[in-house]
Image 1 (cartoon, rainbow, N blue to C red):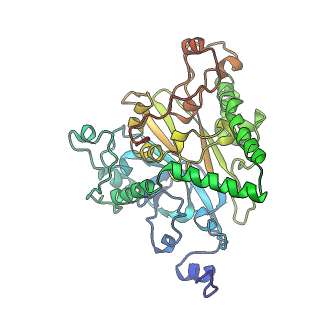
Image 2: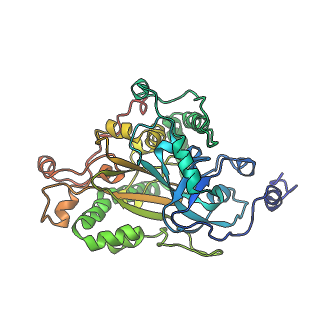
Image 3: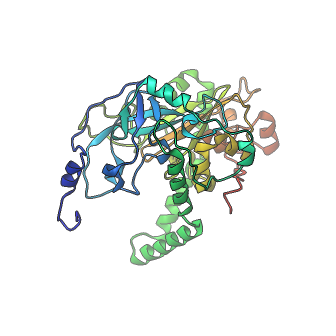
Length: 409
């Protein structure tokens, strides 16, 4: 009816209680918030909802001041809609509040950017009640379900009101419905054939663009950032405070990135992509993923590897990161806290891996040769000096790849 002009989008939004005005900032660091469940006011926008369903109804805590005002992609996806910008927050959720029987430490958590329109005020009391209602795994649960996709629907409903497992099943069904990657590849080839025949693009244009994207990885921009952070504490401090400013110092293009803080008042005009850099420390490990659309910091790491885009990696990394890392060959100590960083359309992450022992006094160029793409994403470790010596010191070696049992079925 909107397309036919019978009604307008503002009329529908007003009737459904959706504001068309840019709201003030409602939350601050330390505030407890509950992620809204999907409801009638947003359901009609499917499949453009940019908040993962596994967060619906869960209480988390605001980690930092608002990142700024950004266009809400749930609305922006509809080209005929001009919705208000929303404050965006970085919110931390604990894994044991998200997944029934989660097999990890109490402090394992997930960090994600969420638009204010998806958040409701909560309290420390509700947060503690949520923690007290955590469901422990039955004895033998993890051995029984090791490597299991959880296709079935759990009947349990948490007392704090969100049917988490039901939504998980819906999302798993959606992931499976993506189909074979070969079909999407065939579609791309057909589009290229048509567009080149029409003169819209040339084969040389396409090849040149692909080579440019791939060159980001081969130039070792990510390893440069990490090596500089390892060798220069002052730079690392600046990088952790403002990822965009940090990579810009090294001459890496920041075109399209959002400066720290962004727009902090309504009606601001600034837009772009957020870059946050985190640091692994003894006892704390970060894992990068994008559950919704496999977003990836291409300008720093080059083209995303196929396993990063694979539906199995995207689905399993958020709910069973320890098992996924083990499949990559990383068997972390049980006491290590794992923080999963879930990207979205407006955010990217980089992690600084732990510096290998035995590299004291090394130059940045020498350190750079130890850093791999996988160690920045969090599915691998940097090379040791011994490994580098055996392999000849090349940048960005080919990843062993994700050998999870569900990838190649």
